[in-house]
Image (cartoon, rainbow, N blue to C red; front, side, top):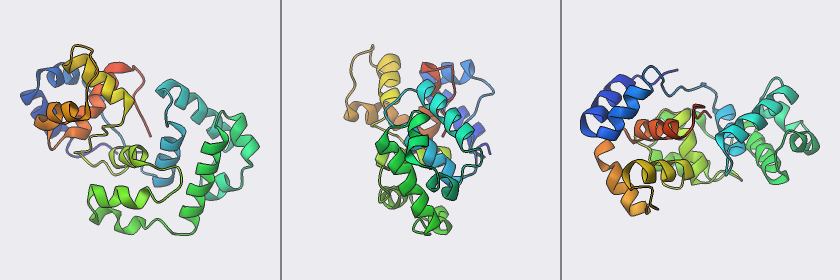
Length: 205
């Protein structure tokens, strides 16, 4: 699923920011896309924590080969040694099992997600072991397709903002917020283009 707002967002970003204009032209035709499955998106986000896009994709492909039908039940039923053989740490394997239990037990209230704001949803998601703010923000961007998320703790976003806006010097959270202010209400879209500028592989969760 492609966000309904994508065309409007890219036009407005290109109109207010020269860097965005160049990136949108460079990656013309590419878009953020939701895979439409909450469990898969959260599982991919956990796999991708603190590692490169390339490494995360490699582990995910091994996981998909080991568990052809990825559901909360099949993941919970998979021994931690199998998850380890796919390249997951013991901790991440435990996180995936805990996530599975939350879905199986109905602890995560998916029916209410469309009605709650970004911060309320982040608070709910971070009750799951292994889901911190960054993982919750990835979920908001890639599954919920929320348009205005700015993941300040994301290393790729920090690097891209430093490169494109700060002469490749380290950039503070305050400075990131100031740079991102003109992107509102499309900060998720701007973030996605900045990620693309760093890696030819599109970021997916």
